[in-house]
Image (cartoon, rainbow, N blue to C red):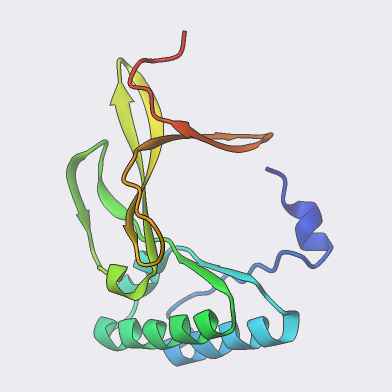
Length: 157
């Protein structure tokens, strides 16, 4: 997806941070400023894992992020934290930090191999509000957009 036009129009704001140059508190203030000044509706923090790994006091950073998430939730902002999962294709998977307790919804995005083909899957593993659905769905990411369909273990022909 070409996002340049959205960025040029001011609909998409991208900040690239070096976590070694700003504190977690400063990071939170920057996000709050962007939310307030631009009437932001969605915040994506990628990679949250890398951010935490660069900080000397991870526990304090997690508490600061919890405070930030409470702020954005009260402001009606959808906040997504991208957390890296270590391992490849379902083997020796692990997560450096668990912040799932902070989220209302947790999605698991993964890549699986089936019959010599890599397939992207998405599953809701936690949903605090509303009915819960544990179905695995296949995720197609193409230049025309993103499509989510029921997972069919049989490859397309």
